Image (cartoon, rainbow, N blue to C red; front, side, top):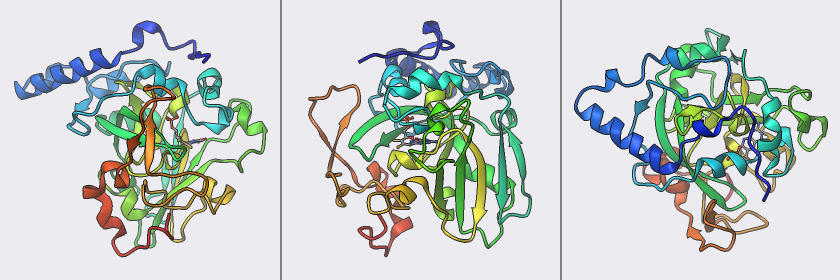
Length: 320
Ligand code: MTE
């Protein structure tokens, strides 16, 4: 497999899983001793205009995902879905360096009292950036464990004061075929769109990702800002977001529009509901090899105790 990485990620900036795990242990020990404030610096110090491969300092450590074995940085950043850069899994790593992620701002509008625009620098400064290890499970039956950096989507949404008419949240990716050459082809109806029900969007597990492995988000993973919804299939995790809209009606989503019998609005990881072309009951971990043993998939990707209540009373074979 030919693996290329964007030229602006230096080898010295890549953290291997072992070093990263040690750093987490160190952070925990330091926090226990009450010296957390001495580590890193103010979050503003991590904001740099140069973009990817930049270590993020002053991160808030969390216990999310403790004990899960991490997928390597190389695998997370070289096997991607990001159709704006091509439909091949290696295309995003090859071409996403063309995306300029500074300056970058996100429009927040729709059913809210305080619509507006927020800049990525402000997002990084204002919202404490947390490290959370979440599983990413793809509909094509592969999975990764990613040490994301991000912050609860709910804290951003609340600032724009959604009204009682806000029943859903819709997301859109940038459209710019010059920077995103995959958009020159009509493989999908651009922009890439996604949506969540309001209670899903406000759930504490739902984050806006700004980085991974303690570094600013690599372009191929959706820099500078992407959604991470750990109990849903990866396609819900829309990348390079430029617009977030509160809506009264259920929004259109890219994969539902493109193949409604295969991809529903909910996209909850569900081993009991097969995709029309394959089973969802088992998956392969990226990094373990093509012929590795498959793992049984857990309901809601292992987050059932925290999210099953959101879907109580719903027929999940119908709302897939
Ligand atoms: N976001 C945009 N804008 N374009 C895409 O093609 N692909 C989705 C999702 N977000 C996609 C996207 C799919 S199908 C998956 S599985 C995840 O991104 C993959 O995320 P990763 O590349 O970080 O593993």
